[in-house]
Length: 288
Image 1 (cartoon, rainbow, N blue to C red):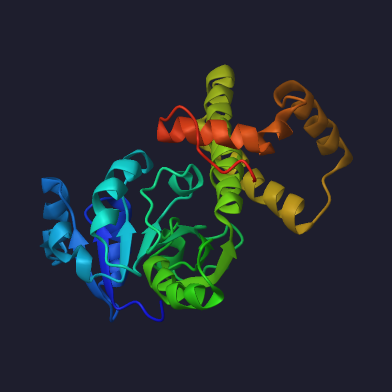
Image 2 (image 1 turned 60 degrees about the vertical axis):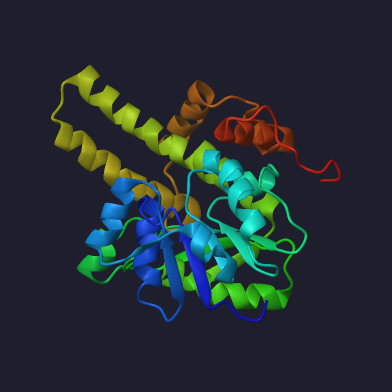
């Protein structure tokens, strides 16, 4: 594939579809916004984007972007992939379905994945719009992790400009394998990071309930220490104090299991992705 000119965005009226569609609408690409749900069509109409019927346009598209829930990708790809033109590319936004090999396969099309990293906690924000854009894809710069296992370097070079528009503003597109991308999400950022985020919220609630202190006081202490803990741990801005290290060791002993790193075993990755996709097991090649 030397170039992408005509795109289909499936699920264009959903949360991610609306975000991506807003960026694509400002580009030079010809984009067909495809959405079945009436509420999604209403959202598209409110933004001045005309909804297309995917079956009417798919054969003319160089790139088909599936902005639909992971658990729907098997059925959606089974319907759409046979209708794609030879040489086109199917792009999903998450690696789970590609990793588990549930996408409908054809030898004459290509498969890629591109997932936003979201704006870094260490990003230097200078405008109100950048501060307001925690998710990315609007004003704050973010990176993207992408996989194109059956694509050449030229194929990646051709797809990257589309990915940059979809998630823009983008500083870097990190090309990894589908399996590596699956270790990033879910293992690193959902199994660990998102879990810890909700765990800290539970700890905040428990602190307020147990002590009866004003919630703003607990929030101020927690939010400031989230920042300094990340800065010290990842950027070595200052060392943790000796007393803090003792409390951290106590926290590890009290909260974290000794065998927690087993989540990086590929068998464990298989289990969590099977749960996410609501399937019995993943069907990855035994050679991995």
